[in-house]
Image 1 (cartoon, helix red, strand yellow):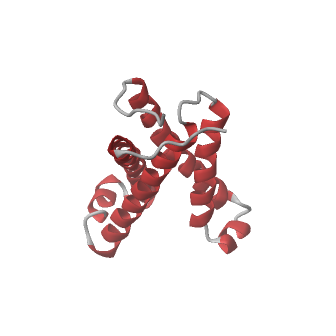
Image 2: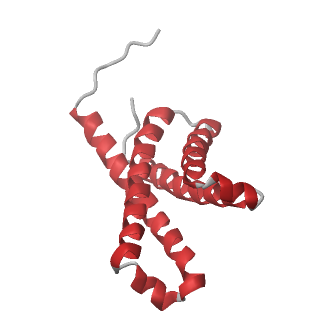
Image 3: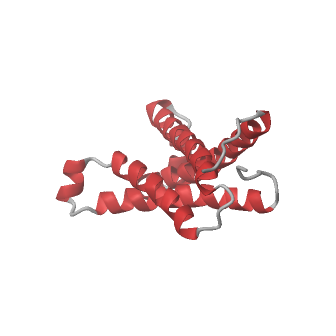
Length: 151
């Protein structure tokens, strides 16, 4: 049986750094994806203008911030789940779990069923991209010793 040590300030700082890094990465990817959804209907210029005006702009930024917060929570969970383990299945499992929860929560079920499940696939694929990017940024930060693994 392993003896657990109490958390100290260093653990809290590392968790905060992890949350900020992964949240920023997730929020940025989500913002790009949200903008990409607007481009086919509006064109680039109107899509860029739409993110700064009224309700359309508010929903864009709130959605990006929510993705960033989700990414921050993902990062903390990822840091504690993988610890010093180099198990790729564990790392992939954490990414997949967050992606499924976020992706499925975004979909209107009635619309998805009528469209033969494509909205489910798209939402999950986008979530995979968001959380895989966050995980990759954390792995790179760990390799550079910017973020220390949980001991």
